[in-house]
Image (cartoon, rainbow, N blue to C red; front, side, top):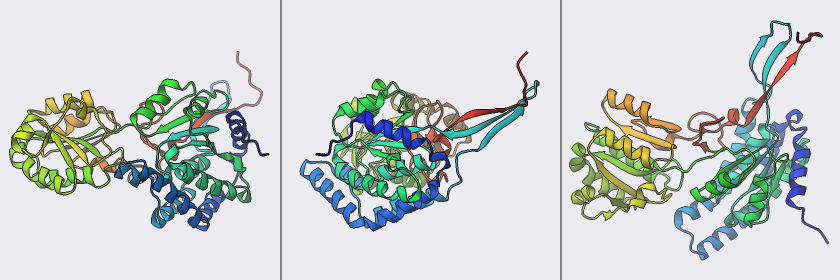
Length: 415
């Protein structure tokens, strides 16, 4: 009888596997994973199809099903992303600073791995491979805990990756999956001080809140995206339309999609009927304030809760405001510090928006959808951090390492 490893067993194995990763051929491991994903494609897609069928049977909404689903094109993109990460510069061993003490020893500040990184996330099975690839490239073992809706997919993906590692000289225990769908396994991971060095949550507000409130190990929040686009007085209407439609429609189930549109009263009468019509034709359910509904009677009334909701779906809240001040106040009250945009012709408005909006990324005359590690040129991304310590915004390889000080002397002692 095979006894399943306990959480403690898995974390201890991950800790052991992490010790030699910095010196291993991590790029070879990533290339091996990419080849393995392609080789195992039929098995992986079959497992995912079972997850998708179960999700639909349970009534999962279409945008969430889309986040869960894999096809040949998406699986190829996941494999190609591993190859892309392998091509990125090694984030380890970079000398960030160096100087000589007055007494003689030389000091270097050098990047090193975290050790063991826990990843707690929802639905999207591509995160399973992305997180493992980034952690391995950064010299850390990774412990993955995805959602129950993607359990078959994640089991198949992790099994494929683990089969590929020993041939590249990397212990298979450097990639672990917490197979238990119960919340107790998450809580155990969050409190595994001494075995886990960092936990990164990626998902909805409830998941992130649970991680932050229950963790005793360090956490980097990757954020809920209640993102806004504000159309300023005098803005170019054609530009505003294109930005708003892209920010809402291009991929509504992601954290950098627009959830609330704010429009200056001076532009509302000419802009909103056309823009709301275009959004509705694209399948967007629009809710709005009373002033919005006066201009667009087909719009349903917005509730107070709508202003605080990350819909992650084809739904949008619209509010007419009287000034930039009012827009800034709304964003401060309801925003989550993720991505905020202004459409304006005014240099003064643009500068004030940049200065006063407290968010990981602030956009002037551009869609919030650009807040993404690949779009920023980082090559890969573990998530978008909305906190301010260690990492903020898209987290690429540079944020997946820590540092230590190396001090070299020739017998000096402190007087």
